[in-house]
Each structure stands twice: as structure tokens, then as C-alpha cells.
Image 1 (cartoon, rainbow, N blue to C red):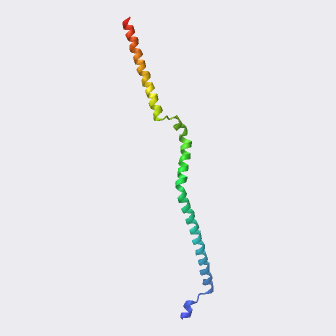
Image 2 (tube, one colour):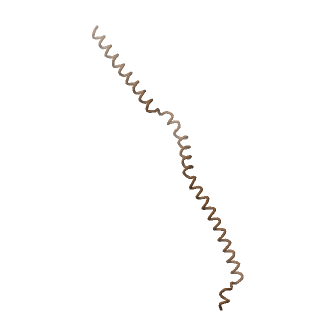
Image 3 (cartoon, rainbow, N blue to C red):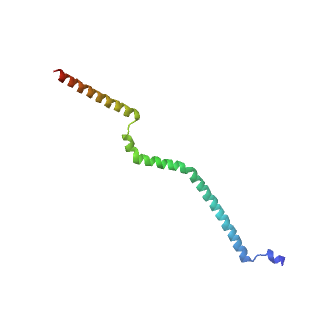
Length: 101
């Protein structure tokens, strides 16, 4: 009876060997896929940055080129204020001249 437990029918033995090789193939496929996924995960931040940079370049480059720096803004505002002060000064001077005459 013990001898019967250790023996396997020939067709079953072929099926077991086939399953063993199939399992080995699947393990190899799994390892290959795992390595690919890990490489992709390592590269994702760089890809995302490149995509964002590309999107910004395409969508906002023209808009950002219209913006001015803070220094330019302050300079223009000061010129505008200087001009408005000058206009007020000229207006007062002209009124003064009119009243003097």
C-alpha cells in the first residue's frame, strides 16, 4: 500500500511537470514585470515634471511673457505718480497764473 502512495500515474506526472514549468514561466514573467514597474515608479517624478513643464510652456508662456517684474511695476508706478504730481503742480500753477491776472 505504501508503494502505491509514492507512485504517480504517467499522465499525472506529465501534467505535474507541465504545471511546474508553467509556474516557473509565470514566476519569471512576474519578476520581469516587477522590475519594469519599479523602473517606471522611479522615473515617474521626472516624467511628471517634464509633462508639467511642457504644459506650462505651451499654455502659459505667452501669458507669463506679458507679466512684469516687481521692480518694473514699482518703477512704472513711481513714474505714473510723478507724472500725476507734475500734472497737479501744473494745474495749480496755471490756476495761480489765472488768478494773478
